Length: 357
Image (cartoon, rainbow, N blue to C red; front, side):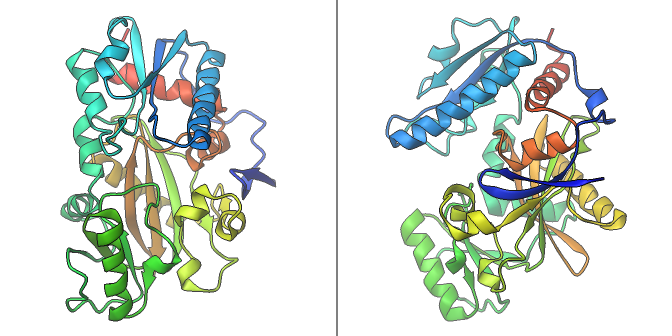
């Protein structure tokens, strides 16, 4: 394939020319169910954050309309039931784009509980999977029971090394996503550094710290979708080659959300990732196994690092970011799905799974 270079979310992206038809594109669903796009807003957010969410919602709404779906969108603050009471479960399928509720940012799992109680079909993971995914240690235990490789780790509730001797290590809040708490200082080299970083997490996030063996290897964001027989979209690799220091070779908060930062500008996304067939097959197998182990539905993203030929699952993301400039949308585009096609395909997966008519 001829490679082209583009910019996605301010980052260098390498992807193929996908202007022609592909086998993936021919699988695009023709289902045109009526959609209610449900998203959350918090009135304590800053004006730029509010505007960013509203812009993303407008793009997804426009994509679904372009794909031919009759569509409505509604913002949720706290009361989910009040927002959807005028809609008909037999007529509308809900595109669940809520990742919390006002005043309760970790309440993502509460939304599907309400939707199910009212009889609505909706996209993405159910309440139990979303609840489990909030706890990184619980996710690791599930992966371990399914014999899926994940970095060696331990939960720390006190600022002490307690015999930990695997360095470099990475220290994370145990119940945060979107790389909250992940900076270059999160990668530690000594027991003293570990104790200081654990103390920082305990004080700043008011939750235990997860300490893991830092896998200094290639990192892949693996988009998976489907039910029954999930399919893996083209692999996206986070290219850290601009950085020689191990402390910089990771996806930090600033690399994802701060366009003016050096990591944001220098970490490239390569899609499709330059991998041989054997490595590609091993990563895909691990990704699908993890997807099933956590009970993901319709779509998800696995973050995987490879060291010495072993594929380690760093994180499982049910209902991952599907903004038009994210790695999931990029992988779908490389597979031949436009943004409207991708959004419509997710709706169709949910509709088929729930036998929605």
